[in-house]
Image (cartoon, rainbow, N blue to C red):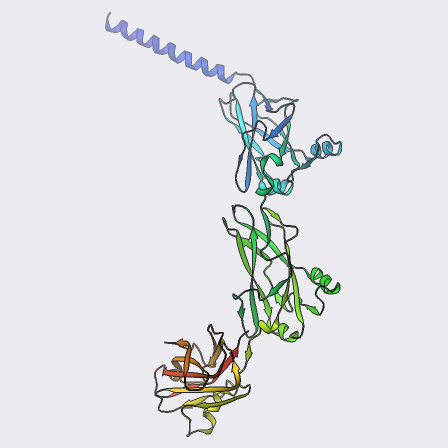
Length: 460
């Protein structure tokens, strides 16, 4: 065959292939619109029966299947909506048994489905909060899902454009799977302090309060906190807490409005801050308050343990300054040059005076009590000037006889950030001593020592 004839033949073949493809394309564009429906059984979608849902600690993921009568010839969209009125009517007519409406706060559903070219099924992802499953455990959750406004001249199956989704909660979880939120120590009146992790201060007492999530923890969530004065007052009125006095939120104590549980955490804590003045004012009574949990963003409240009642024991929550209580006082050295800056100024409860000592090497100040005292804290206040004279290294010591000393607290390389600054130092001690001694071994950088005040505190 000649080269010219071969070229003509190739051109004819290529022309035929191009013509076929073009005709196929034209035929695709001329395909009839499709009819669209929601796959269901007699208009119902039962979960879990026949539905390949997935479940996590926080969510139930349910596929809602859209079916096309043929493959989609073009990309188009279908609007998705829910019809609460349908469910409400069916419930009122007792046609859905024990069903309850799945409220909008508990689920997420796309508002539009985009149907891609060439597919004949599409799945709508419905995400339901497990909080709804837990809250309505034992009942059926109902949701009516509908389609509307199919684009590109496609049509909706009149008999199957809506389906009623029914979630049988008792088949999704077991009673022991329900996550309950509660105060950790709820169940009876909690006596405060209940442990050793409270923080005592001059103006306020900080009491940590614990909240517990039962079950396997999932994502982060929040729960609201509030005062519940009526609960506490009712116990006072009926004699359960006879002799107690109700503390007022804001005036006497404060709490945060919201508590956050971090992800994968079963316990969260917040601080109850009680004003020391409120405790002192009611030292002969038992101050009482009540707190409640509400509106968790996940899971359920334990109905019997979502409120806690607490009584305060002021005698165990108030620090007492015992520096000038039935004592005798002496120091290792005295200032004989200035009568206004003698050792007595160290415990005169006036931060505007000071004890100044010349030719410093070491110095101690000693308190002797009439009877042994237990202490676990003390304060020191920097004087008015010359920070280089401030104490740097010291020990606090206790003794039964004034001769044999036990070191209770050691501080080194200390620094006061400003003048007239009072710093509290705490230490663990459960032993009562008759003598206490502050023993300063170094100052910041001087041959003089000065200190405005040293106070010894009795801790509960």
